[in-house]
Image (tube, rainbow, N blue to C red; front, side, top):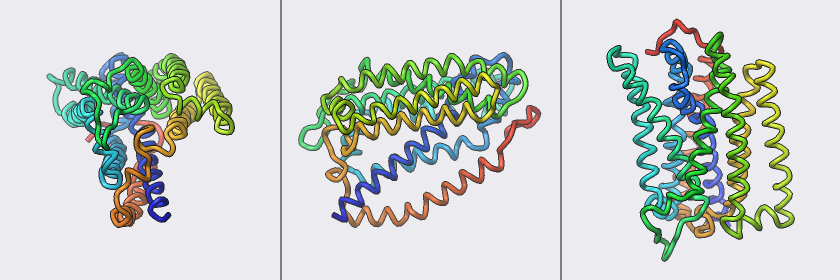
Length: 335
């Protein structure tokens, strides 16, 4: 019983880390996605300044989620990684290009355009691959004798491409609402206008993915359309509708914070929906959380360290956002 509780505690910790990464690094990636839609170099400078102090801290949560999966659910890690090697490697390469572009873009004039492309390309590649990996996991991974038994290209399907586009467009919406909150003047008005089409496209993609998912597997269908679990099928759309209303009303009324919070809420609701669909599996319909967990001794050992580490990361993250709160000064550079 204790081992069962520990495995579910750890599943919750990893889910929390992934969720925090998505909502924090999502707008960060979104800023990069919006780079080609800017009018001049000054706009790109201030856009990058809005995330410069916090972007690397946001990615800490990705390390925590991936490292936690390796440490406490080694069987799930051994199954998922071979199935998703390509999108994960491409995602990491995209993040590397973004990180290099952050540092090099400010130290050159001749090659600044090249690093702008690298920043956009890295953001696009990372966003698209994150969505594709999510779609591949949702549609199912073939497992035989506790090992991945599928092919090299199983991750590339119409459904995974749909989720890849959905996540990418959603990140662009997050980026636009973040910049609406952090910037002023012409660039703020420009980003507010961009938030409208990206917001509408995100809602459309969410609807398409939500309607397709129950038909991927009978377990998903029963989870969402069989009583009593089907109650969530009515609650979640209502909450989504409220968030969408708050998003567009906030944009219409030229509010700074409300659109961003509503955009984040859409991602949180989507994440909760995925969690409801997965539970109690860590690899959908193949490996349950309790079956994929490491021995109790390993779970206890890592849990003690994590209970110290997570409050430290949360404190640092909150402090960084507090220090760099408010609007961005266009004359300030990134150092």
